[in-house]
Length: 426
Image (cartoon, rainbow, N blue to C red; front, side):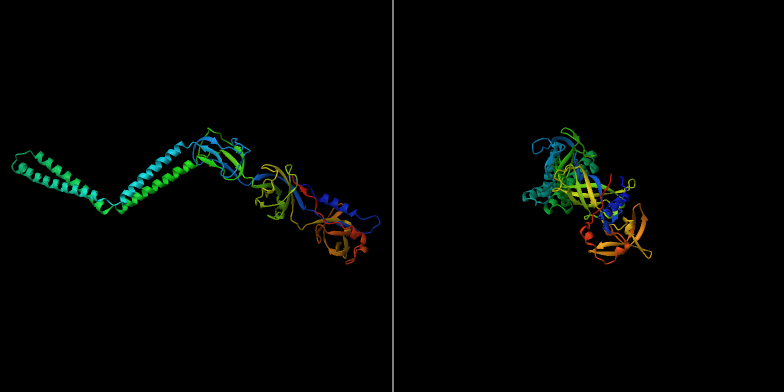
């Protein structure tokens, strides 16, 4: 980016302005010109604010790409609307997983219902009868053990093995009775709080599994997240799309939010204001100039180029004819900056060692003290006292008096203030 030297150009402008005096007229008027530009021209590209590269959350084989309004397969250049189907993955495995998760939920729910339900009367009667049968069986087996003990240990008519078998059978029956007693107690009192809590937890776990499986089925179909333009397509039907690492399928940009980004030298940083600085945009794609304002300033200076970026928003209504990536020229009106101005040397009058100039103000001559800076070939820099655009009188010192009315020929020819030509940034 190169800045065009500006002071010599302004000097020429001032000298040209001094030539406005008519032949034979003793006084003339020149316009004080700033040595810094009031406008600058830069170039940039129109770019979307929102860009999305879409990839699915799950892995699978792509079986279908969506279609546009004409029924054509979606590709770069196609316009899409929010919610429109962009592509589909094979959902066979995910649908089966959802069905299995649903069955697990039904089983867990049934188990919980069974714990919470009251035991029927006939079931309680069956359990009590089983307990009575076990009690009778235990009583008979205890008699057998006592009888066999007499025969083995006292009478010694039977081998010891017979006694061991009868005693083992009694122990088994007592174990069965304990289990039966536990079933009866549970039937009479209901399940414990711990058992119910565990069953509830299993139901919730199954519900989460069902929701996760249903989400997987849902995400086999990708929808457009916003209205926009497809700018790139990376995959086709038949391709396997991996979730990790993400496989990009489509790139979509929003046409509702576009910005022109242009870069300016850091010297202009303090003269650009967000929401205030006026910008005029031109492009070969636009039929007329587009008026806008600087909407964002990127608060970072490029250390290599010494520039900073500004952005100007282009609304959907304004972008008629424009598209992302378009080359745009921006003429930026810089905020007024107090600085040196240049006027002809002949306009400076010295009074008692003080440099003064006379300016046209309200139809009269106004004496103004100034601070003179460097002298140029035909002009002089004024560091303070007057500003850019001031109408400075040039002529014999004896005709310049503070408060005197301007001659009619000067009043009629008084030029309107104008800005410096915009500086070109390349």
